[in-house]
Image (cartoon, rainbow, N blue to C red; front, side):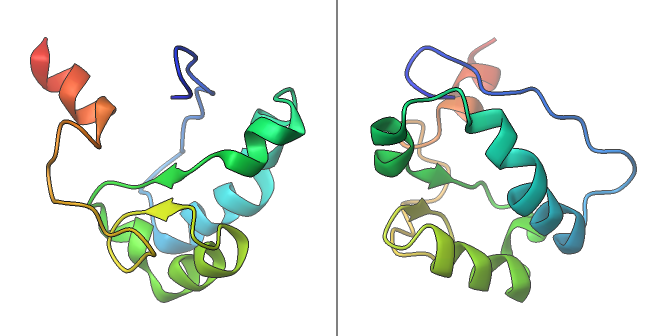
Length: 97
């Protein structure tokens, strides 16, 4: 989600693993974002929930290199409070229905 826009969707085939998620971040996410102006992409934050695949060592290393100081989630620059509806609009929206 970016302001009022939903980026995607992207559907993973099979079980989501750290390796599949890393591949998504490296190969699939950039094309999904390419229509956004550069100044918006440079100011975006990437937010994760508590899914195990989001925090494999390869994913964390990639995020720390690529989204320095712009990643929200466990083991990131901004860990954020767990299960906070203020910081996690997807959980909030789905939980509110």
